[in-house]
Image: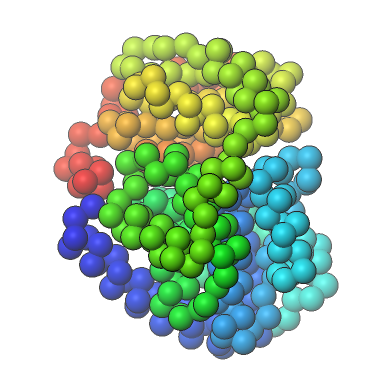
Length: 348
Protein backbone atom coordinates (compact mmCIF):
# COMPACT_ATOMS: atom_id res chain seq x y z
CA UNK A 1 0.00 0.00 0.00
CA UNK A 2 1.41 3.38 -1.00
CA UNK A 3 1.65 6.44 1.26
CA UNK A 4 -1.04 8.15 -0.84
CA UNK A 5 -3.39 5.21 -0.34
CA UNK A 6 -2.77 5.32 3.40
CA UNK A 7 -3.51 9.06 3.44
CA UNK A 8 -6.74 8.48 1.50
CA UNK A 9 -7.85 5.75 3.91
CA UNK A 10 -7.03 7.94 6.92
CA UNK A 11 -9.09 10.78 5.45
CA UNK A 12 -12.07 8.49 4.82
CA UNK A 13 -11.76 7.13 8.36
CA UNK A 14 -11.86 10.64 9.83
CA UNK A 15 -14.98 11.41 7.81
CA UNK A 16 -16.56 8.14 8.94
CA UNK A 17 -15.73 8.92 12.58
CA UNK A 18 -17.88 12.07 12.36
CA UNK A 19 -20.84 10.11 10.95
CA UNK A 20 -20.38 7.35 13.52
CA UNK A 21 -20.42 9.83 16.39
CA UNK A 22 -23.54 11.54 15.07
CA UNK A 23 -25.45 8.26 14.66
CA UNK A 24 -24.45 6.93 18.09
CA UNK A 25 -25.26 10.17 19.93
CA UNK A 26 -28.69 10.29 18.29
CA UNK A 27 -29.50 6.73 19.34
CA UNK A 28 -31.09 5.33 22.45
CA UNK A 29 -29.11 2.08 22.68
CA UNK A 30 -26.30 0.53 20.65
CA UNK A 31 -26.36 -3.13 19.70
CA UNK A 32 -23.15 -4.62 18.32
CA UNK A 33 -23.07 -7.83 16.32
CA UNK A 34 -20.34 -9.68 14.49
CA UNK A 35 -20.30 -12.79 12.34
CA UNK A 36 -21.44 -16.19 13.57
CA UNK A 37 -18.64 -18.33 15.03
CA UNK A 38 -16.87 -15.18 16.24
CA UNK A 39 -13.08 -15.12 16.11
CA UNK A 40 -10.53 -12.83 17.77
CA UNK A 41 -10.87 -10.04 15.21
CA UNK A 42 -14.64 -10.15 15.62
CA UNK A 43 -14.86 -10.13 19.42
CA UNK A 44 -12.04 -7.62 19.93
CA UNK A 45 -13.48 -5.17 17.41
CA UNK A 46 -16.91 -5.49 19.07
CA UNK A 47 -15.31 -4.64 22.42
CA UNK A 48 -13.65 -1.61 20.84
CA UNK A 49 -16.96 -0.35 19.48
CA UNK A 50 -18.52 -0.79 22.91
CA UNK A 51 -15.79 1.48 24.31
CA UNK A 52 -16.66 4.11 21.70
CA UNK A 53 -20.33 3.92 22.67
CA UNK A 54 -19.37 4.34 26.33
CA UNK A 55 -17.27 7.39 25.45
CA UNK A 56 -20.34 8.86 23.75
CA UNK A 57 -22.47 8.03 26.81
CA UNK A 58 -24.63 5.38 25.19
CA UNK A 59 -25.49 1.95 26.57
CA UNK A 60 -24.20 -0.85 24.36
CA UNK A 61 -24.75 -4.58 24.08
CA UNK A 62 -22.72 -7.17 22.20
CA UNK A 63 -24.94 -9.85 20.63
CA UNK A 64 -23.46 -13.36 20.45
CA UNK A 65 -25.54 -16.48 19.79
CA UNK A 66 -22.65 -18.93 19.33
CA UNK A 67 -22.98 -22.11 21.35
CA UNK A 68 -20.14 -22.70 23.79
CA UNK A 69 -19.25 -26.06 22.28
CA UNK A 70 -18.84 -24.42 18.84
CA UNK A 71 -16.91 -21.37 20.07
CA UNK A 72 -13.19 -20.72 19.70
CA UNK A 73 -11.36 -21.32 22.98
CA UNK A 74 -9.54 -17.99 22.70
CA UNK A 75 -12.83 -16.12 22.19
CA UNK A 76 -14.33 -17.84 25.23
CA UNK A 77 -11.27 -16.78 27.22
CA UNK A 78 -11.81 -13.12 26.29
CA UNK A 79 -15.54 -13.31 27.01
CA UNK A 80 -14.73 -14.65 30.49
CA UNK A 81 -12.30 -11.76 31.01
CA UNK A 82 -14.77 -9.03 30.03
CA UNK A 83 -17.95 -10.47 31.55
CA UNK A 84 -18.04 -7.90 34.37
CA UNK A 85 -17.29 -4.91 32.15
CA UNK A 86 -19.23 -5.38 28.92
CA UNK A 87 -22.83 -6.46 28.29
CA UNK A 88 -22.98 -9.64 26.20
CA UNK A 89 -26.46 -10.81 25.27
CA UNK A 90 -28.22 -13.23 22.91
CA UNK A 91 -30.73 -12.38 20.21
CA UNK A 92 -33.54 -13.51 22.51
CA UNK A 93 -32.38 -11.07 25.17
CA UNK A 94 -32.29 -8.29 22.57
CA UNK A 95 -35.99 -8.83 21.97
CA UNK A 96 -36.66 -8.00 25.62
CA UNK A 97 -34.70 -4.73 25.82
CA UNK A 98 -35.01 -3.19 22.34
CA UNK A 99 -36.48 0.28 21.84
CA UNK A 100 -37.68 2.35 18.89
CA UNK A 101 -34.48 4.35 18.54
CA UNK A 102 -31.69 1.77 18.56
CA UNK A 103 -28.65 1.51 16.29
CA UNK A 104 -27.06 -1.74 15.14
CA UNK A 105 -23.33 -1.75 14.47
CA UNK A 106 -22.06 -4.73 12.44
CA UNK A 107 -18.36 -5.43 12.84
CA UNK A 108 -16.03 -7.79 10.94
CA UNK A 109 -18.91 -8.74 8.63
CA UNK A 110 -21.13 -6.94 6.14
CA UNK A 111 -23.64 -9.48 4.88
CA UNK A 112 -26.93 -10.21 6.61
CA UNK A 113 -26.52 -13.96 6.31
CA UNK A 114 -23.31 -13.76 8.35
CA UNK A 115 -24.94 -12.36 11.50
CA UNK A 116 -27.30 -13.89 14.02
CA UNK A 117 -29.84 -11.02 14.08
CA UNK A 118 -30.44 -10.89 10.33
CA UNK A 119 -34.19 -11.34 10.86
CA UNK A 120 -34.40 -8.14 12.92
CA UNK A 121 -32.53 -5.68 10.69
CA UNK A 122 -35.73 -3.78 9.87
CA UNK A 123 -36.23 -2.99 13.57
CA UNK A 124 -33.19 -0.70 13.77
CA UNK A 125 -33.42 3.01 13.04
CA UNK A 126 -29.80 3.03 11.90
CA UNK A 127 -27.36 0.34 10.79
CA UNK A 128 -23.61 0.94 10.70
CA UNK A 129 -21.00 -1.41 9.21
CA UNK A 130 -17.29 -1.51 10.08
CA UNK A 131 -15.41 -4.22 8.20
CA UNK A 132 -12.39 -5.18 6.11
CA UNK A 133 -14.03 -7.81 3.89
CA UNK A 134 -15.20 -7.07 0.36
CA UNK A 135 -18.85 -6.18 -0.12
CA UNK A 136 -21.25 -7.58 -2.72
CA UNK A 137 -24.96 -7.73 -3.49
CA UNK A 138 -25.63 -9.42 -0.12
CA UNK A 139 -24.05 -6.60 1.88
CA UNK A 140 -26.56 -5.04 4.31
CA UNK A 141 -27.94 -1.84 2.80
CA UNK A 142 -26.84 1.23 4.74
CA UNK A 143 -25.33 4.61 3.94
CA UNK A 144 -23.18 4.57 7.07
CA UNK A 145 -20.33 2.16 6.60
CA UNK A 146 -16.56 1.89 6.54
CA UNK A 147 -15.51 -1.16 4.53
CA UNK A 148 -11.86 -1.29 3.51
CA UNK A 149 -10.47 -4.61 2.19
CA UNK A 150 -6.98 -3.13 1.87
CA UNK A 151 -6.67 -3.09 5.66
CA UNK A 152 -5.50 -6.17 7.53
CA UNK A 153 -8.34 -6.58 9.98
CA UNK A 154 -11.31 -4.90 11.61
CA UNK A 155 -9.19 -4.49 14.74
CA UNK A 156 -6.85 -2.27 12.73
CA UNK A 157 -9.81 -0.02 11.85
CA UNK A 158 -11.16 0.01 15.42
CA UNK A 159 -7.76 0.86 16.89
CA UNK A 160 -7.58 3.91 14.62
CA UNK A 161 -11.08 4.96 15.70
CA UNK A 162 -10.23 4.56 19.39
CA UNK A 163 -7.33 6.94 18.95
CA UNK A 164 -9.45 9.40 16.98
CA UNK A 165 -11.95 9.42 19.84
CA UNK A 166 -9.08 9.85 22.34
CA UNK A 167 -10.18 6.79 24.30
CA UNK A 168 -7.67 5.74 26.95
CA UNK A 169 -8.02 1.97 26.85
CA UNK A 170 -5.96 -0.35 29.05
CA UNK A 171 -3.42 -3.05 28.24
CA UNK A 172 -6.07 -5.79 28.28
CA UNK A 173 -8.05 -4.13 25.47
CA UNK A 174 -4.78 -3.51 23.62
CA UNK A 175 -3.98 -7.21 23.92
CA UNK A 176 -7.36 -8.24 22.49
CA UNK A 177 -7.00 -5.86 19.53
CA UNK A 178 -3.44 -6.98 18.87
CA UNK A 179 -4.52 -10.62 18.97
CA UNK A 180 -7.22 -9.86 16.38
CA UNK A 181 -4.62 -8.33 14.06
CA UNK A 182 -2.15 -11.18 14.64
CA UNK A 183 -4.88 -13.71 13.79
CA UNK A 184 -6.09 -12.04 10.60
CA UNK A 185 -2.59 -11.37 9.27
CA UNK A 186 -1.31 -14.91 9.91
CA UNK A 187 1.10 -13.49 12.51
CA UNK A 188 1.85 -10.37 10.42
CA UNK A 189 2.95 -12.41 7.41
CA UNK A 190 -0.05 -11.91 5.12
CA UNK A 191 -0.20 -9.72 2.02
CA UNK A 192 -2.49 -7.30 3.87
CA UNK A 193 0.15 -6.50 6.52
CA UNK A 194 1.06 -2.97 5.46
CA UNK A 195 2.93 -0.01 6.87
CA UNK A 196 -0.34 1.11 8.44
CA UNK A 197 -0.73 -2.31 10.08
CA UNK A 198 2.66 -2.06 11.76
CA UNK A 199 1.93 1.52 12.82
CA UNK A 200 -1.27 0.22 14.46
CA UNK A 201 0.64 -2.58 16.19
CA UNK A 202 3.09 0.03 17.49
CA UNK A 203 0.19 2.04 18.97
CA UNK A 204 -1.11 -1.06 20.74
CA UNK A 205 2.32 -1.92 22.10
CA UNK A 206 2.60 1.64 23.45
CA UNK A 207 -0.67 1.01 25.30
CA UNK A 208 0.83 -1.99 27.04
CA UNK A 209 -0.06 -4.81 24.68
CA UNK A 210 2.21 -7.84 24.93
CA UNK A 211 2.79 -9.61 21.64
CA UNK A 212 3.55 -12.81 23.57
CA UNK A 213 -0.01 -12.71 24.92
CA UNK A 214 -1.37 -12.76 21.37
CA UNK A 215 0.85 -15.68 20.37
CA UNK A 216 -0.01 -17.62 23.54
CA UNK A 217 -3.70 -17.01 22.93
CA UNK A 218 -3.32 -18.43 19.45
CA UNK A 219 -1.18 -21.38 20.49
CA UNK A 220 -2.83 -24.63 19.64
CA UNK A 221 -3.49 -27.33 22.16
CA UNK A 222 -1.91 -30.68 21.35
CA UNK A 223 -5.34 -32.05 20.44
CA UNK A 224 -6.09 -29.13 18.09
CA UNK A 225 -2.70 -29.38 16.44
CA UNK A 226 -3.18 -33.09 15.79
CA UNK A 227 -6.67 -32.53 14.37
CA UNK A 228 -5.36 -29.77 12.08
CA UNK A 229 -2.46 -31.97 10.96
CA UNK A 230 -4.81 -34.87 10.26
CA UNK A 231 -6.96 -32.56 8.17
CA UNK A 232 -3.98 -31.25 6.19
CA UNK A 233 -2.98 -34.83 5.32
CA UNK A 234 -6.18 -35.06 3.25
CA UNK A 235 -4.90 -32.36 0.84
CA UNK A 236 -4.72 -33.03 -2.90
CA UNK A 237 -3.11 -30.78 -5.50
CA UNK A 238 -4.76 -30.09 -8.85
CA UNK A 239 -4.03 -28.15 -12.01
CA UNK A 240 -3.36 -24.40 -11.82
CA UNK A 241 -1.57 -24.92 -8.47
CA UNK A 242 -4.76 -25.55 -6.51
CA UNK A 243 -4.77 -27.33 -3.14
CA UNK A 244 -8.04 -28.73 -1.84
CA UNK A 245 -8.42 -30.45 1.49
CA UNK A 246 -11.62 -31.90 2.92
CA UNK A 247 -12.34 -33.82 6.08
CA UNK A 248 -14.49 -36.88 6.39
CA UNK A 249 -18.17 -36.01 6.31
CA UNK A 250 -18.79 -37.58 9.72
CA UNK A 251 -15.99 -35.60 11.42
CA UNK A 252 -16.97 -32.29 13.05
CA UNK A 253 -14.38 -29.50 13.33
CA UNK A 254 -14.33 -26.12 14.97
CA UNK A 255 -14.26 -23.25 12.53
CA UNK A 256 -10.89 -22.18 13.97
CA UNK A 257 -9.39 -25.61 13.11
CA UNK A 258 -10.44 -25.27 9.47
CA UNK A 259 -8.99 -21.74 9.33
CA UNK A 260 -5.72 -22.90 10.90
CA UNK A 261 -5.43 -25.68 8.34
CA UNK A 262 -5.91 -23.11 5.56
CA UNK A 263 -3.19 -20.92 7.07
CA UNK A 264 -0.84 -23.88 7.35
CA UNK A 265 -1.33 -24.78 3.68
CA UNK A 266 0.06 -21.38 2.68
CA UNK A 267 3.50 -22.91 3.16
CA UNK A 268 2.93 -25.17 0.13
CA UNK A 269 2.93 -22.13 -2.22
CA UNK A 270 -0.27 -23.05 -4.08
CA UNK A 271 -2.02 -20.20 -5.86
CA UNK A 272 -5.11 -21.05 -3.80
CA UNK A 273 -5.92 -23.54 -1.07
CA UNK A 274 -9.37 -24.46 0.20
CA UNK A 275 -10.05 -26.44 3.39
CA UNK A 276 -13.49 -28.00 3.80
CA UNK A 277 -14.96 -29.45 6.97
CA UNK A 278 -18.21 -29.99 8.79
CA UNK A 279 -18.80 -27.57 11.71
CA UNK A 280 -22.18 -28.90 12.85
CA UNK A 281 -24.87 -31.36 11.79
CA UNK A 282 -26.19 -29.07 9.05
CA UNK A 283 -23.23 -26.95 7.99
CA UNK A 284 -20.11 -27.40 5.87
CA UNK A 285 -17.51 -24.62 6.12
CA UNK A 286 -14.83 -23.60 3.64
CA UNK A 287 -11.78 -21.56 4.58
CA UNK A 288 -9.63 -20.43 1.68
CA UNK A 289 -6.32 -18.60 1.16
CA UNK A 290 -4.59 -17.25 -1.95
CA UNK A 291 -1.27 -15.68 -2.92
CA UNK A 292 -3.22 -13.01 -4.81
CA UNK A 293 -3.20 -14.65 -8.24
CA UNK A 294 -6.72 -15.93 -7.65
CA UNK A 295 -9.42 -13.76 -6.12
CA UNK A 296 -10.65 -15.79 -3.15
CA UNK A 297 -13.67 -13.52 -2.74
CA UNK A 298 -15.01 -14.45 -6.19
CA UNK A 299 -14.57 -18.15 -5.50
CA UNK A 300 -16.28 -17.98 -2.12
CA UNK A 301 -19.15 -15.93 -3.54
CA UNK A 302 -20.13 -18.94 -5.67
CA UNK A 303 -20.91 -20.69 -2.35
CA UNK A 304 -22.71 -17.71 -0.82
CA UNK A 305 -19.67 -16.55 1.14
CA UNK A 306 -17.11 -13.81 0.66
CA UNK A 307 -13.83 -12.31 1.77
CA UNK A 308 -11.13 -10.47 -0.16
CA UNK A 309 -8.47 -11.33 -2.74
CA UNK A 310 -6.27 -13.19 -0.27
CA UNK A 311 -8.68 -14.98 2.04
CA UNK A 312 -12.31 -15.89 2.34
CA UNK A 313 -14.84 -18.29 3.76
CA UNK A 314 -18.26 -19.74 3.14
CA UNK A 315 -20.79 -21.94 4.88
CA UNK A 316 -23.13 -24.30 3.05
CA UNK A 317 -26.18 -26.02 4.50
CA UNK A 318 -27.54 -29.44 3.65
CA UNK A 319 -24.62 -31.03 1.82
CA UNK A 320 -21.46 -33.01 2.54
CA UNK A 321 -17.74 -32.35 2.33
CA UNK A 322 -17.09 -34.45 -0.76
CA UNK A 323 -19.84 -32.77 -2.78
CA UNK A 324 -18.44 -29.34 -1.89
CA UNK A 325 -14.92 -30.45 -2.80
CA UNK A 326 -16.05 -31.77 -6.19
CA UNK A 327 -17.81 -28.49 -6.94
CA UNK A 328 -14.66 -26.56 -6.05
CA UNK A 329 -12.53 -28.74 -8.31
CA UNK A 330 -15.00 -28.17 -11.13
CA UNK A 331 -15.23 -24.39 -10.85
CA UNK A 332 -11.58 -23.59 -10.13
CA UNK A 333 -10.58 -22.87 -13.70
CA UNK A 334 -8.10 -20.34 -15.06
CA UNK A 335 -10.83 -17.67 -15.41
CA UNK A 336 -10.63 -17.17 -11.64
CA UNK A 337 -7.14 -15.75 -12.03
CA UNK A 338 -6.82 -11.98 -11.67
CA UNK A 339 -6.19 -10.42 -15.05
CA UNK A 340 -7.96 -7.06 -14.96
CA UNK A 341 -6.15 -3.85 -14.13
CA UNK A 342 -8.73 -3.20 -11.41
CA UNK A 343 -7.79 -6.40 -9.60
CA UNK A 344 -4.07 -5.69 -10.03
CA UNK A 345 -4.62 -2.29 -8.45
CA UNK A 346 -6.51 -3.89 -5.56
CA UNK A 347 -3.51 -6.09 -4.83
CA UNK A 348 -0.97 -3.26 -4.98
